[in-house]
Length: 339
Ligand SMILES: [Zn+2]
Ligand SMILES: [Zn+2]
Image (cartoon, protein in one colour):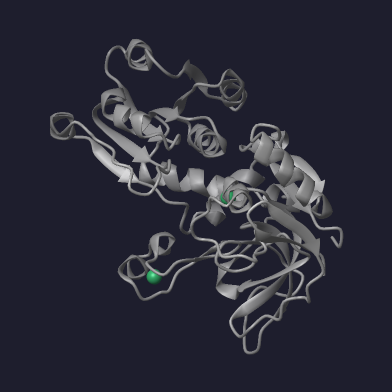
């Protein structure tokens, strides 16, 4: 079969490995669409601390069930599915309370084991979610990034009467914008990039210029109250530190952005009690794929419209281009030739 293989940092090549044999408990998936995520770009640039090479990347996988390992049940052969890439151990505390997204022994498809930049991939049969009929494979491959937005909005308990500020209009910020909008919330988005803000506006957010003066602009549009919900999706420590002055008293902060390991973030302790702030972390997603697919099928998520499709064999060129300029392509999805 055809596959794009990361040999080492900055070494991605097309190769022809044998089709994976599904083990007991696993399903074989014929890949129909494989999304390129920032995590894959980090594998390419050698900045993903969890990956071991050689590795076939991709955790945003839509395809059809092509077979099962011995004694394994699941959706019928030929069923269109997406793959939830987070595999928990089932034994640790987070797994026991239903948070396998923070499993102590987490395995991620496309990071710790081979993923979807290939004609076929073997994954645990329990991690398949059926795709609604009216959703294309291409659109279905967005289930994973949209699920991150669903998780963030669940953590922040975003409801129709909420006013939400999304800090950072990259792919995760935009996913939050769309999911929060679909729940009926009024959504502001802030970013330093005018281009990203323009996209956030197209997706239904009210743009607010980031950087110096953000606090004043936020207070101005909220009658000096601050934002009921602040969602941090920049991963910049200074922006995280600013969330407590942007949030309204009694409001919620959700942190989705990732700072580097060991980076400290200082929050004014008195604000936490004085404003009675609810502070949540939010990691990837857990059990959010069905809702994400429903949202995509309902037409409320527009992000797939600004994505580009490429043949899988173009992966080495696309990664090279993105490593030089991450803004060159908003979102790339690969289609294996076999499909
Ligand atoms: Zn992703
Ligand atoms: Zn676990």
